[in-house]
Image (cartoon, rainbow, N blue to C red):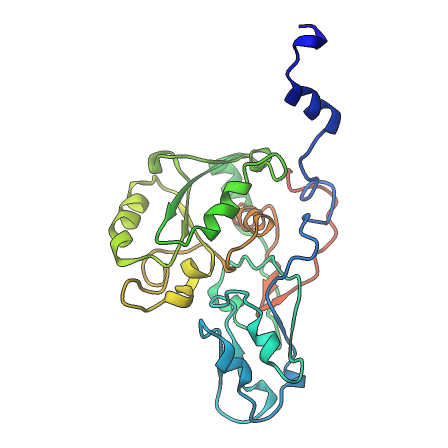
Length: 283
């Protein structure tokens, strides 16, 4: 083929080079500079008797416990929609903005703020998962009443920048070919039966990720006239990933957490510093 017959888009791609981010392979940055993550809580700055954050929190992620101490504020990040209203409402700066986005968790309790975060447990599934899945994972995604915010982030996973396939992770249309059921949305009553039927059609072993605050807890619509509280009490969840919506790096983090290729970073509602790695997540 002569140079004259090469399409313009091919020449543009060759000139620009590789577009895929090196994150999870050779660099620490996920390419989300300036991203607003979960708000951080500093209970030492809480003002006794103040309830401004509770009044401002639409999904009820912030509540008060008995007493008037600084420990009375309870934050459930599994219900947080990352609206930042608590930060605007707090008069003392007890809530502050952060870029904490890696909130994938194996335990629902780890999404609730605690002063003393429990240490992480060692990996017990890595060898079993590698034996079952090898280096690949196939996902069946079900939209159970989402606003399509999570879907737009999922769609970005297959673009050249994030390139989900490099991790050996693929989406499939058939539940019979799927290892993982990834659910978005608050699970409307109309979608309960199709969702359970999809799960039942998957071969063992099968896993479930609740992707987005709606799937974790119902979000702002949880417990309403049309839906329950996400997957709570409906399906066994292996990884909880709150966010409204969780961004592509957070979804990748959760997938690699499921595969035991990355450690869990959130414990007791707090992000732990990422430990240096000798090799990439491809290993």
